[in-house]
Amino acid sequence: MRRAFRRRPPGLSALCFAGLLAMPFGGPAASQSDPFGALYTPPPGTTPAQDASSGRTGSTSVSGAVGRSYVGAESGGQVSLAQLDMMPATAPPLPVALQGQSTRYLANRPKIAIPGYTLAFVQGASASAFGGGAGLDTSQRRTQIATRLIGVTDEMARDLADEAYADLVRQLEAAGFEVVDPAAQQASEQMQGLARYEAPVGGQGIIDSRATKAWVVYGPRHLPPIKGHAFETGMGAVAASGALMRFGRASRDLDAIIISPRLLIDYIDMESTGRRTYSGSASVDAELRFGINPKSQVDFVWGNNSGGAMPGWFTTKGAFTPQPFGILAQTADRSDSIATHNALVSVGFGSIYRQSLVYDAEVSPKRYAALSRAAIQGFNAALVAEIRKARGQ
Image (cartoon, rainbow, N blue to C red; front, side, top):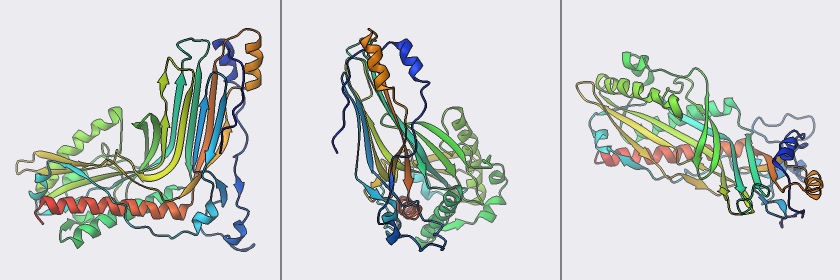
């Protein structure tokens, strides 16, 4: 689809620009129902499946751009959620590559203990770009795209966290490893003393490219997220040092290597031209892309006989799939008014303009869950393979 650019003369002052921020947000989502939705949905009077989506259609990619004489947005890749609901409820494990540090420690205890499994989901993302207009403060351009994930409930996320833990235990035992069961772990004084979150915990940061992303962290119902191992940023990450010391002593007491996986599921790829002072244009692109964010990692600890904690870890460059799972539907246009801008320019003000677009990233719950399981199984399989390699199997 070609951009529908709207031309306007240059000019708008910072004073008038601040006034435009008070303008009301845009209206309802710019999407539509699938005209063939009746072919996929239950007959009237019946109850839809719990994992059914809204059935509407939308795009899989969007972009925004501003320049000295234009502003525009475009979308591409029309998809129907109703059609996605009909796709298979299973998907093959995602191929994942892990890079390890200090992996020799994995062979120093016969058993394996898993005190928790951190499973997090990116649930919001935004990116912006700025063009300074050749350094002139009277001709600045800015564009921003923000998205939020729709269709993933807390219950669904907790179910997937339970499955992630159970799948890792299953794969380890199938490979011949002895895994310490949760009851035996909790009998350890060191494990009892681990600080845990009582409820799902959120975080945010610039974790890839120039996009700011927000996520929510879950753990298995019987093993809530461990503080310091829940994708914290800033001072929240300090708790990891306390957990490390407890892991070291628990490793000695249980005669086991302590393993703590952290898996971050992502839904979108965002690119931006960034901040360019000597350019009169700026653009942001967003595309739905399901996968494992590179921030994911696995920590492990070997506790020596003195109770010391010897840490190691696995990192990944991420793993993604082109398989469809959702749509982007515009819910708000918070951009400056073109008409007001042109009127102010005509009376001698500068040309400062901001474009701001907001989208729902609505998923087919069944399809999203299927791909989440594929990511979990692939991540766990890669970890088990690395442990076997470290132990010479």
